[in-house]
Length: 246
Image 1 (cartoon, rainbow, N blue to C red):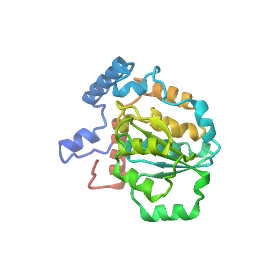
Image 2 (image 1 turned 30 degrees about the vertical axis):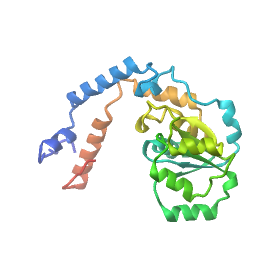
Image 3 (image 1 turned 60 degrees about the horizontal axis):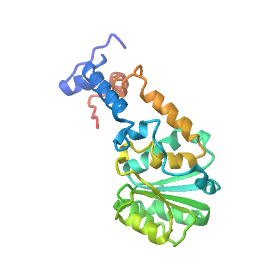
Image 4 (image 1 turned 30 degrees about the horizontal axis):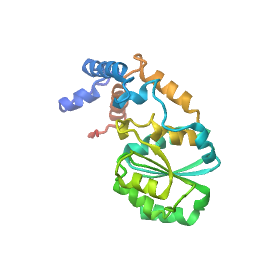
């Protein structure tokens, strides 16, 4: 295998399938780490969720009443739901709760869920940073769970004039604020990801601590480098002629 030679068709292939450490990428990676270390304690910075000084926007004692549920439904899009779904899929063998994720408009999936589950025994968590995400609101309405003073619905959104926040106040749902400076793709260590993680029965403090240690370990190899090596080996082994990277 190691004696085989890769023939690059263009500079893009060479950049992304080069088996040697890409020094430029490493420099960029170190710059990002330096920025995070410098500004993470700033409470208005997007990377503040990586700080040990970051404080979750809810009290654990207030959530204990929700842990009695064995079935949970997360409704969201993109970064509002993908982090929690990744944690659930990765640690599913350790989780004794059932989680369902609605992150797209799927009428068949909605219909099957409505017919096969008792809603009064399910906790619904709706997450949208803006409170205006069309797919999220559509799934919320389609599930027909909107009921004033509902005890099995949690809303996570910004304190703004968005539809979801206004609805939460009007219907008196349990509300958790989504920080305005935390964007979706960086939200997994904020309330967006930590709330579902807690309800999964996982140790949220240990999760945050271990992830932070891993992210700041400069000895870790670049994800892109590891991916490139694996992809290059697949190309060689399977004799693939074309490879498209997104």
